[in-house]
Amino acid sequence: MKIEVDGVKYTIHFKHVVPVRDKQGKVVVMPADAGTMCAIHQGDCVHCGGDSPTGQIVECLLFGRSYLNPLDNFDKALGRKLSLGRALRAKPDTFGKDFRAKFWAEYRAAREQMGKVTA
Ligand SMILES: [Zn+2]
Ligand SMILES: [Zn+2]
Image (cartoon, rainbow, N blue to C red; front, side, top):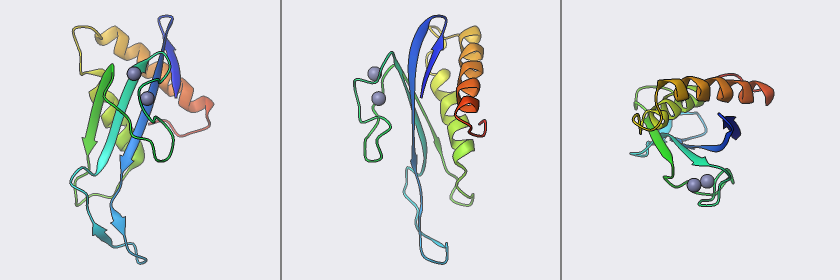
């Protein structure tokens, strides 16, 4: 996803590491890093596999992740919210409160435009 804040373009990626379930839906493998990663680039993504299904994201300008509590169901919306929040707080001296507020607003607007539920 691409957004613009204060005239600067950013690319946001999310990757979910999900538990493996059997046909009945029972979790059979819970990866230690189950959860959601969020990476933010300034400008276009030129560093990683990005949003391709098999691509791996790299830690770039800002990076954050959330971990799934093994007792909880995987909630992608919550994973996005937590990991993006952590990414945006990763460099508070450079990206302060005003920036974070604008970034969230642009992010929510972009998701709405995609017709996706806000997270
Ligand atoms: Zn980058
Ligand atoms: Zn990328």
